[in-house]
Image 1 (tube, rainbow, N blue to C red):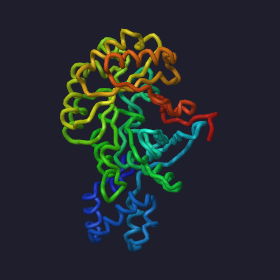
Image 2: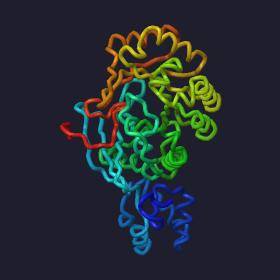
Image 3: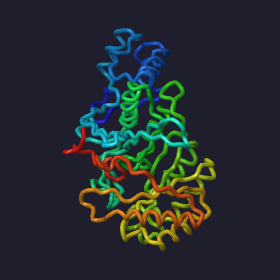
Image 4: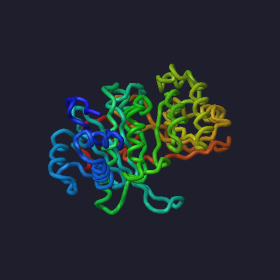
Amino acid sequence: MAEEGRGDRVVDLLSLTRDELERLVRAWGAPRYRADQIWHWLYRQGAQDPQAMANLPATLRQRLAAETIVGGLEPLQQIDSEDGLTHKVLFGLADGAAIEAVLMHYGDEDEPGERHTVCVSSQVGCPIGCAFCATGQQGRRRDLTPGEISAQVLHFERTLRAAGAHVTNVVFMGMGEPLLNREAVWRAIRNLNDADGLRLGARRFTISTAGVVPGVLAMAAELHGVGLAVSLHAPDDALRDTLVPLNRRYPLKELLAACQQYVASTGRRVTMEYTLIDGVNDTDRHARRTAELLSGLMCHVNVIPLNPTAGCAYEPSPPARVARFAQGLQRAGVPVTIRQRRGVDVQAGCGQLCGQYVADVPR
């Protein structure tokens, strides 16, 4: 797969499947096992420079250096939250665009040991246009390649390995709508899931969508084990049309039917994300209608106060109303969690990523 904007002869190694990598090296006259060695260097050793692949012959290393790239991302800026639990990196792309990805550290009594979750981007910008999302306010510039997606994860994997840890989870909750870039997202997941690569189990991945129904149905059919999160934000079409414009194309009835198909096919519950906006979608009535909407669906609701973004007139619901909304769902028998807000102080929270340099924050 040629890298976008780099010419037909430049191949991104991270965008290739194992079979494609094997065909490439065999076309160059090298034996098949060289592909296994390269794959090991890419995903197990985190190599970025072919010259570091010491067990390859010099001629093969030189050709790789001349005709391939590894992901094509350049870290431009890292900012760390005050509590040290969130790290956001701005990456420059080969065509001059930029994206952001986030590493978050977790640990709790229910899951002993630390979890290290990478929140990746799947597009430059986003076409959905949610009014309270900084990415959505930009519009879509282009899709990311599989290599650009995988490279975000591998960047943080290298950082964690230096500290004796590893990436444990990957969530597609960064910039873009992942189910509108399905081929690249699927390929990145399968490469990162490979038993001879990073070896991240399918259940360690979660794809978040604003409600792309064909994509949800494709997940049900093709990506068993991968988690599904849906950005709900409203219990009726009239309000959701305003908050999530994609709802006009895929209304709630169609979306919930697709979620039911996902549950039936995978046996996994759906996570419903509900951003609480002061005076907009956070009343007792909204809680009741949300519970009615989700009745009969195996799901869990994450509620979170709106994160501030430039140019957004909405305000987050106050803590007391957040708690009351969650209690309303609980009383109706809907499993619910008030989600931890991570990285809000460095604009790394949900809806805050915008792919731009951030000034006056801790480095």
